[in-house]
Length: 344
View 1 (tube, one colour):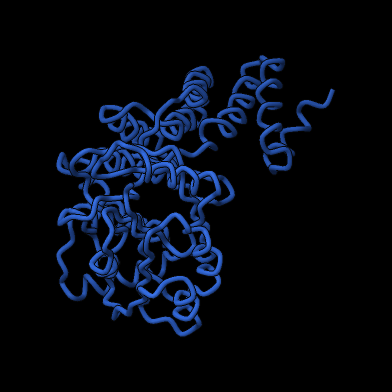
View 2 (cartoon, one colour):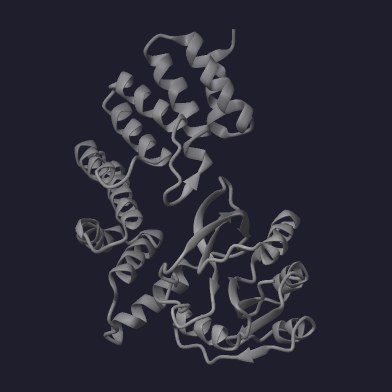
């Protein structure tokens, strides 16, 4: 049987730990590293494990996670955040995994973000404990793939109660002041944080440089081109947006979101037939690269197909797509606004 250590780094997470820790009965040990809590986080953790440690916070998530790994003793390491949850099905899958005969070095699981329009992506989640099991990146830390990689049919659901964009921006700014060396990946996530904090002008040159780099991870390069296309569309520059989107599909087949951005470009140009083609592609997208947001493969393409087909004069088919969107989110403001066009 495989043995599994679950590791967490926490700060002021007493309520989330009360929810998460009872879900971890499949773990052979739980390692909790506290980075400076002022609430009852440590006391809550001590009710579930005797492996609770302190770590002096130094603006580096990888160092904290690697410290947690250093305290683990099992064959495999699983990392979690305090605001994650595991369904009963996921817990059963992990128990079954421990008894399964196959072995790999890394196991990926779906990482589901619970928000208004949920999305998910594949994330390394269980890793064989060895000298390659180390996080890199002081923010948005990750373990580089190595050895035999497999995928588990289960997920970790992330349910954040607060946003961290400003906190992350402050960490990046302090790192710049300290002349800390940024990796390519650090630069990319710094640019994303700038966009999240409404500092688009600073982000764009970083994204342009990153997107062209053959050394960057291909999924991140596509994401960079997507962000550049969104920025171009925000100022009405459909030509630049189409250029960036065209570069992205040279790297990977288009995701539903990329298809929808193509569709938006052609809608803004009033080239509705081209837009219909791209929104139809979005509905049929099978891509599982990067972020998979059902919004871009179900709701949005149905809404936009309804609008495009109405403007092309096919009101019967337009209503079909409107009804499909309405069945997904009946109280969505866009659906309610469009309803009036289909009143008989």
